[in-house]
Image 1 (cartoon, helix red, strand yellow):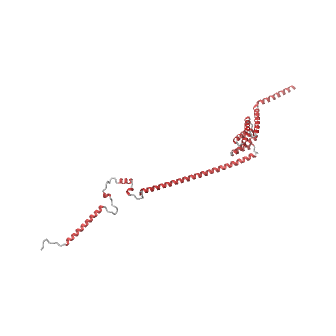
Image 2 (spheres, rainbow, N blue to C red):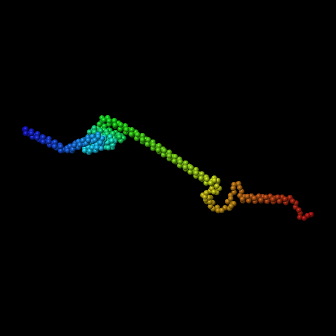
Image 3 (cartoon, rainbow, N blue to C red):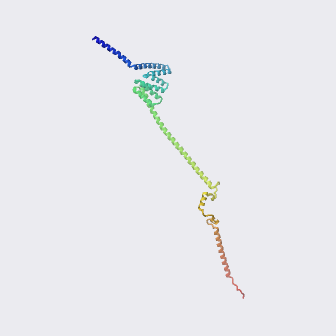
Length: 297
């Protein structure tokens, strides 16, 4: 019985040793990760010392070495981000804080990373992004008063920015309206000037026409000169078959005046009347004389 118990103990001990050996063989990656994290943590401490000594160049290089050694080290990119932030290299700072937030496994570490990302957005006046970053920070630590205050400030600045944008849009609309009104006014003035020029041109044309009708010295030209070639052609077309007319017919009498033929006829009539009167007078003289006989007694 005693021998059986000893065998059981030996078997149990052997199995225990075998189990430990198997566990060590099954988790070599974890052991390697732990060693890498330890190395990265030591480099982070070394970089912190260099940064404290105001040796930024060496500290930056050491932080980068620490980050390359282990992806699980959130402190290295977070501290490097703070170093960039203090030097106002906000683009590099945001990249480091973002990496720290993605690597961090604990909520306090995530809270710090997103809080500082919000600070970078505030520096860049990206208030909408700052609001989102502070909200994410509060999800990991709802009791942080500083983050809550920064969130309220970011919301206020965002609201102010939106109001200014609306005012600028309204002012821009008014400026565009004023500009359009000015353009319309200038167009009306230009059109008015064109109308005035047109009126002046028509007036000058009328004056030139009057000068053409009156002559250079304002004297009336003979009627025959006022007729244009077109009027002459029209007159010729009206009488194409009349031919040459006698001079007497060409010279038509004026109103209340006698033609030469009428005057001639009138003179002849007067002469005939005068001849008749003379004949009557002669006849009366003959009747009054005594007739002598041919022979005397």
